[in-house]
Image 1 (cartoon, helix red, strand yellow):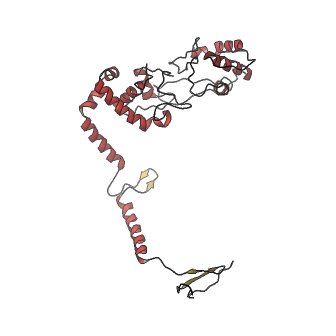
Image 2 (cartoon, rainbow, N blue to C red):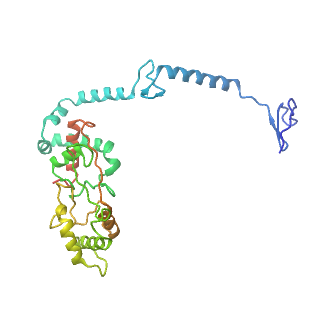
Image 3 (cartoon, helix red, strand yellow):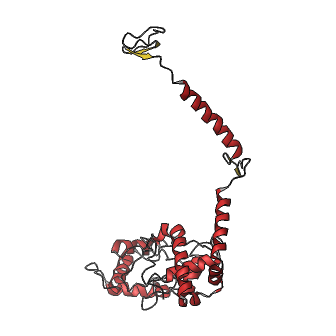
Length: 293
């Protein structure tokens, strides 16, 4: 390929001057952009400079340029929310002062709490628990009656407020220990106790595995949290192992992984992020989904 200079030549087909650029016999025509397009382009540059001056635009090390207008979409939202609360007025005040039980007994307050709770849930909780609160692997289903930390109104409110393993001093604590990782149990023992755990909920077990040995291992290592009847302990966040509801999965491989490496999912604390009335509404909403105790 070659680039030869033919500047000033006139293209025979179009009658347009060329730029002098040629590649393999193909010449570039000298056809400038229309003047109106050029001036529009310059106008957008001037407009952008004006925008940078009057509106927030450039990020800084510890903030951003505020602009002459001092505009803030967050400030606008705060104003809109304040107006909305003014319109709601007495209803929101009643929701704020009523107890959780009083809200559920009052049809009007219950409807208000559920409506508000549903919107807040969609904005804050749905990314983990799903838009229908059905959860997923590692994220509890809030529609059933299986609750790691308790399903009463007060317990749900506490979980929303302070979270679990969230770093908040009031939050739920307690992890599933890593019995394999820390060397407490051997691989064979983990297989035995995993199969025993599966048998607790009527699931099939691996042929040839000593379930009696698994039961003994369970008694020595697991009853402290899950209880002698294996029905769990909401104080510790220890799940019921006799039902067929599994947070991470109830197949043998997943249970072995859980026993070997432990579990410690985090539920964030919402106190400080959401106001008390909003948290109250969300607790009522979650409790009313069908699985609240």
